Image (cartoon, helix red, strand yellow):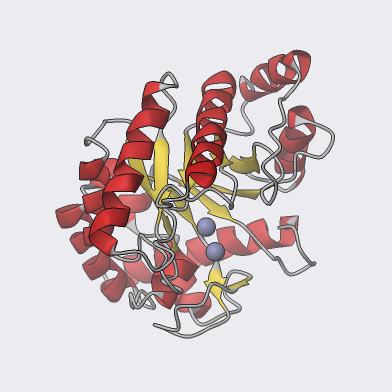
Length: 290
Ligand SMILES: [Zn+2]
Ligand SMILES: [Zn+2]
């Protein structure tokens, strides 16, 4: 398991790498630009080169990009579609450039439009974005299920993958907070195992490429996306320990997105906590003989 966190790129990619190292991360996630603005930013070639050089080192083994929050591949609005597509393509090209393990994308919102029309629009945009970029994976993140957001069940994620042509580059990122909020009870190792079984059946384990470990301030099925530091929310120490020690998650990057115990950005204390929770989870599994 590659334990890590979302880190700021203020000052550039090399700085982001350093933040990851300082916090004891094996993996990092970054925004390719300000997540609440359309204005695309480009990393400078020498910054990218320095970052790729740093990535040859031992410390950070995986980098993931999180796409802009404003992107809505389900929208009908032409202007919004153009902006969303441009932004997604830009993120995937940046992913190609820095050899990211994937670009994480929220599948969008129907904004009240009929479901059966909104889903194909997502598929079409994903297909287009993949055709305009090289090889970086596109990872659909499950959502907390608020309002009209898409991606709240494995079935829906599967449908989106199929509508996008089932391309090998399309994968899934599961967020523990969103899962709990959208009604998946993953608060113990056994319950989580059942949910992962369903994921394997419906989505397929080879599509699962990235995990977000966030605890949840709001309870099971609340459909609200309010992150808590690992172990401090409704998942609690037991739920987080189970998530961090699930055998089928072993090869994946697991990223904490914050807010952490020291404020907005994840801190070293949060990463240390994740490692401790993982160790507890492993010990509990051993005791149970599994
Ligand atoms: Zn997330
Ligand atoms: Zn979230």
